Image 1 (spheres, helix red, strand yellow):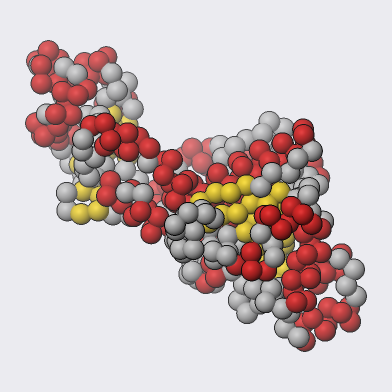
Image 2 (image 1 turned 120 degrees about the horizontal axis):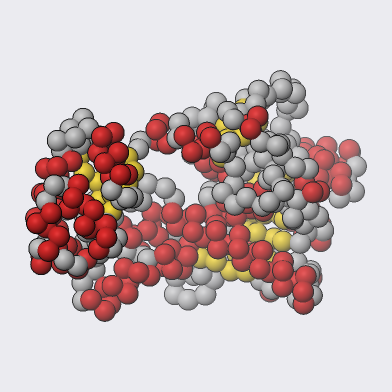
Length: 420
């Protein structure tokens, strides 16, 4: 059961966001999950371009549906004086301003952090950029895969046949998470000191933090970790092995007790004292020989049998799932992690609850807005009359969608009845 926004931790907090794509929408969606009112400002003529990344979710973009529930959408032409005046009035009522526009765009409009601090001293501005707002690459555009390349992550991912991108927008997600935690920190600081501090996050520096371990390894070891697919660069055995039924199981050995247990599972007790494999570094150095031994044993078993033997030996393991198997995962079902969320057009989709549970509180899981769906209502709150709103629409400062027909009641999501 979804809580009313006024019962959630960020009740009363208003966020205005000039956002697009992934990083900023991910940060603000998490604020909305906690009860913040998020007013998403989109450009007329299509809105956030992530709405058109694909059309797989009942005609909607999978990215947009994931990132934009529980928000209000307002369309504004910020190239016009009238559009910027409306944004100014919105910010006068806001607690947080988030933006991830192209480099320099908000400064040209007069909405950079320094200018806002003079006009709205209690407003917390958050800037999400590619490479930071200063330095030699401040004016450079950045997208997720470009940043994966610049941080060296792509050189670590893949196998001996070549490098590969991480299969999710990991730089965007990292930046969105740091923006989210930074905004929460700034809100706490404002509440305890009265000072509103600006927040700045770059995709490059967020992902740079996440590649720090291989960076240390490379700087002090003289060579970077190799690309070895699902194998682990510094622990062995730790990787996926093919079973007799063509499916894969991944497992790891983390200590000497587990190494002994694996040798028993392999029916090779002689390996326990084999000096090639006596330590983690030794097993890494002799990975090829070790993998041949493990592959021969697991290759004679189907995956279910292999996993049962690994469980019995006390070795952490997992089947290498595809996305269909993930969607049907018994943990998500048994723990009631799915909820229904309505999307533009009236359809509903199953969405995962946020991963952080707050005792006694359920997150907000409201509708995904159509572009400009809340333009008229938000302008009315700001004091614009019906005639003013009609004029703004005629002048193309705003864009209002056709009134949507009410959606039919949604059936409960799988296992939703298990929740109090």
